[in-house]
Every structure is written in C-alpha cells, then in structure tokens.
Amino acid sequence: MTADVSTATPQETIALCSEWLLDRKAEDIVVLDLRNIAEFTDYFMIATGTSDVQVRALADAVIEGMKEAGHRPLHVEGYNTRRWVLIDFVDVVVHVLQPEEREFYNLERLWGDAPTRRITDEPQPV
Image (cartoon, rainbow, N blue to C red; front, side, top):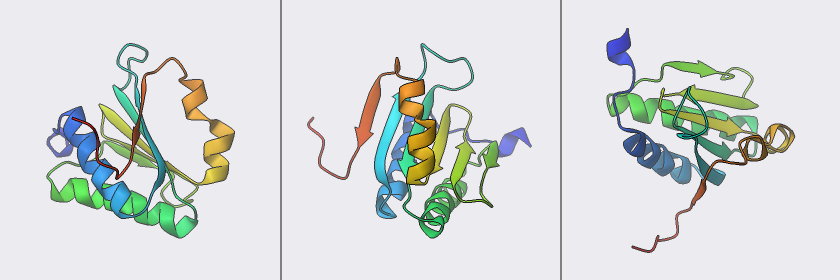
C-alpha cells in the first residue's frame, strides 16, 4: 500500500493542487509552512468552497488529479459530510472547508507562527 502513497515533492504537490483548486474556483487559498513548527507534515494548504457541491468538486479535483499524476493520498477525512475535507499527502495536508468551518476552526490563527503564502491566479513576480 505504501507504493500508492504520494511520492511527489511538497512543492510539486502544492503546485498541482493549487492548479486544480484555482480551476474549480476555490477561494482564499493559503499555504502554511509548518516545517519548523510541526513534526507530522511540512505544509498545510487551506482553501474555501462555498457549498457542499463545491467542496466535493474541489476535493474530487485534488484527489483525482493527484491519482492521475501517479500520487495517492495517504488518508482522506470528511468527504461524506463535505463541510471540511482533509486530504493527507504526508508532506502536504490539503484542507477544503466551507466558510463557517474555516472561520470557526481558524487554522491560520492556530498555526499563526507559520510563514504563510497566498495562492492566486494572478501572475507572481519573478
């Protein structure tokens, strides 16, 4: 089973997931760098979906896109409730939340010491 787990680098995982999340109109995508803070993962990606349908579409895009790229998640939680879906790629954990859950759990505040980067579809300076 470990052969199925993602072998992508964290940067590859972030880039691929960012593309799929942006394509499906995820809102407020951020990446928290947890490398010097947490032992269990290197990065959190957090994105907002505005409805059950969009949260499922975002999660599906990430899961299926990574599978097509040859990388399977170690674990997925919350898929059936579609309020907060957690997709664990070991070095990168993707969180797709509805606005109420994102505000309530406020992962950015909880991990406030982590360097944060916003992901947008705007061109980034070189």
